[in-house]
Image 1: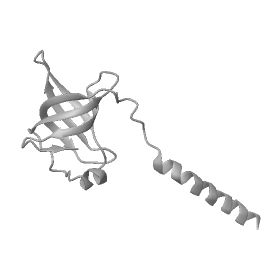
Image 2: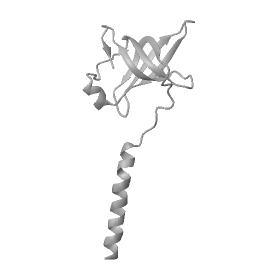
Image 3: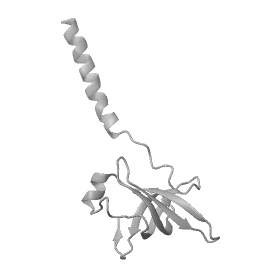
Image 4: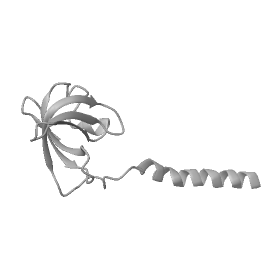
Length: 123
């Protein structure tokens, strides 16, 4: 009887903790939600993977120097529902990306929209 109560207690604890673990995720606090920045550049890499798909792109600054930005978007499941795929972006594509930049000033951000080489805008 005592063993059954202990097992039941362990199972109940696991069940109660599971939802918290399932929704646990890092916050978007590192991004400035009040600022939008537009980047024009060339795709260096399109990482189609979870937990976030990531676009790495070279952006030429006003001073002529090139900086590689790493900008994230949603996960594969969410992007697929909106029409994205692993072939949406290709190395060498010239794209325009609107992002929420990092508060730190690092060349990272969260994607709001992407304008593809054919002019199509995707979210």
